[in-house]
Image (cartoon, rainbow, N blue to C red):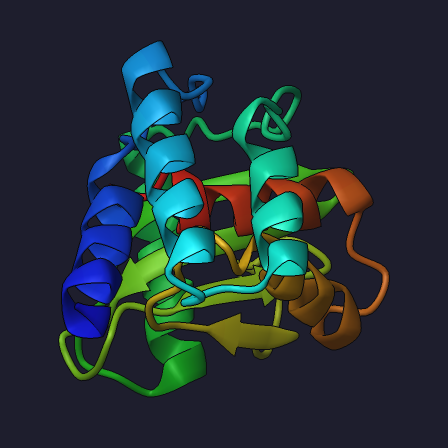
Length: 174
């Protein structure tokens, strides 16, 4: 049962959203599915009531409102070239960007490992390296923990951008 619940949580988390110039709020059906999964998880003691309450508080918010996610093809090429040099890899594909108040988070595929999110406190094309990076999977009840990780590891990042990132990778990731 535990493995089945984890698989359902990860599937809902990964399948519940899509990239775009602007991150849409969760649909009513996605919200209902997430709420049902969370309720089942707390009932079966897979998560604590505190984790349930925290996760539930993220379902109806839209923290990416005001975060710029657009990127032109020309910008993708120069960004990919800069990141390729920073990471010392042969190839980089820029999959998405999140920008707010001078900070940028860039989601890339290096064709070497899991796709990382790279955090920059200034223009990524001028940086010598990212401030920090994150990759991996996160479940829908880890949003607050991911937001805290971002704030702790990307010192000075705007609160809105940290919340948008956490929400995106746990509740709206494609």
